[in-house]
Amino acid sequence: MVLMSAVRRVASLLAAVPLSLENSGEQHCDERGSEHRTARMRGVGALLAAAALSAACSLPKHIDADAPPPDPFNPAATQLLDDTSWQLTGWKRADGATRDVPHGSEGDKAAGAPLTLTLSTASGQRRASGFSGCNRYTGTYMLRDGKLSFGPLAGTRMACGSAAGKLESDYLDALAHIDKTGVQMRPPQELQVITATGDTLVFARGEK
Image: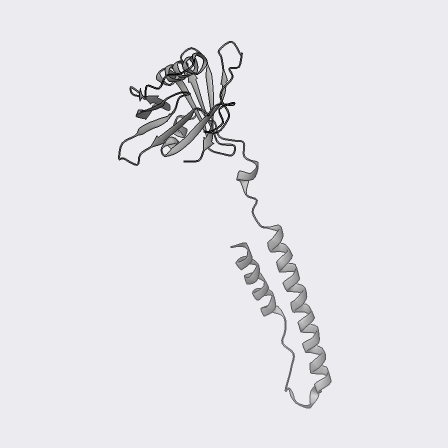
């Protein structure tokens, strides 16, 4: 749009430049006509350079580059959660203390496999699934009034060690008592779950 405006300005300026008086009889010789053409071409070049500089200076700045990140607790943000997957990366208790969470891969027994959450609409319904520290779980989820919530979650019944079993129990209890949900889809993409007891669970976007 800016470039087209500049071109139109050049065209109007060119129209104001007088044409050389060629073929006007013996009053002007060929050398005089050549001088007119050379001067006119120099004028055209100067006008084009000025128009290009004007167009470059007039290009609009993309305002999103300097815009602050959107509010993750905007109720509309939760609607972006359909068909996403997440990994638990942090757990802060209501008193400010942090809780260790597994951060390894599926086969990393030393660090433990991360706790995961997948929200899918592939079946035509909103279905949740994931790994809770020892077992896998599945159930339904809802996005209502700016909050993520879950229906009853069923899981496998693999025997767990005391630490993994306690973490799994607390994790599933946290999903059952969500008070507030924050969603940030700008990098780094993040999901925050604040429980009724004041704990904050932080998830990073994972591969689906």
